[in-house]
Image (tube, rainbow, N blue to C red; front, side):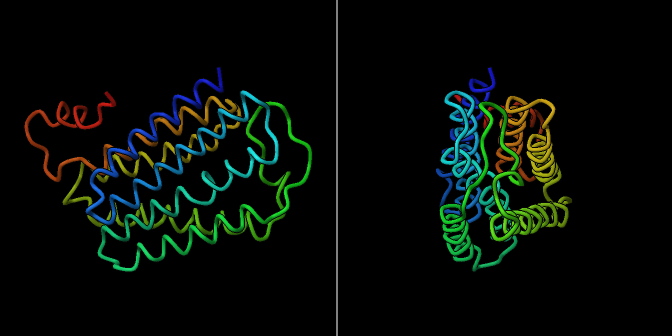
Length: 218
């Protein structure tokens, strides 16, 4: 069941990333699309690990996409929205660094057959875990700060973005519910983030119906 939930979450996040990529003429949409794509890869790694048992390869993919890339790319997308012209270059540089670290660091210890592996059991603190902590804190702070700064202009969209970040964080912390709980958090976080990114600035009549129409997966 956990593998199926994670696979479904991967499909949801990938579909929404594709819809954002269609709006790639705006820099922030392109960065947000890559962030949701990384989210989809992380969910896919969970499905892979739960179906075929976790090992160092699966863990590397999950850690690179979920711990090192998703939140920082979200944050850089928000900074692009706020007018920072170098967000795209910073995203490329950081992604290269993050992937290099994920591929190069030694992974140690035995893996359980099921359940998302705890990073502290398999990775030294520096550089991978240190980079993940710093990047996630800064990325999340950028998303929330930009959303709160402009919440009067986009009350619905920015509220959904903040809720999406909270859902993603809650999903990663649902250790008691295992991989299935994390998968639900990924799907909910991706849907909320996407809805926030594409929500209208104003709230016209029937805005709820319009929002769900835009977020429809079919």
